[in-house]
Image (cartoon, rainbow, N blue to C red; front, side, top):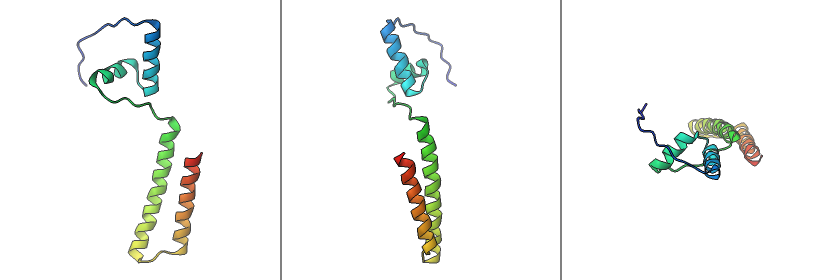
Amino acid sequence: MQERKTKISVRLSSAEHTHLRKQAEIAGLKMEPFIRALIMGIEIRPRPPDNISKLLREINAIGNNINQIARKANINNAVSRDDIDEVLKLLREIYRIVKY
């Protein structure tokens, strides 16, 4: 970890402090790392909602299942009706997850 030796004090009005704290919370950071990121010119994005990471994991798992079916179809040079039905089921599940 980088050693930080220099301390800088900055006086803020109550409104400035509140604004800084809210911006850091939106980014999902504590105030010190948020200020460091600002100083270094790092693009700070709002922290995604917690349910987004769960959604991405589920979509990733479904995508992996679809890839396995596609691999099987390429190896066999054919696609069974069951495989097609499974892909459609997985795609409907993705739609359901993203829609809500």
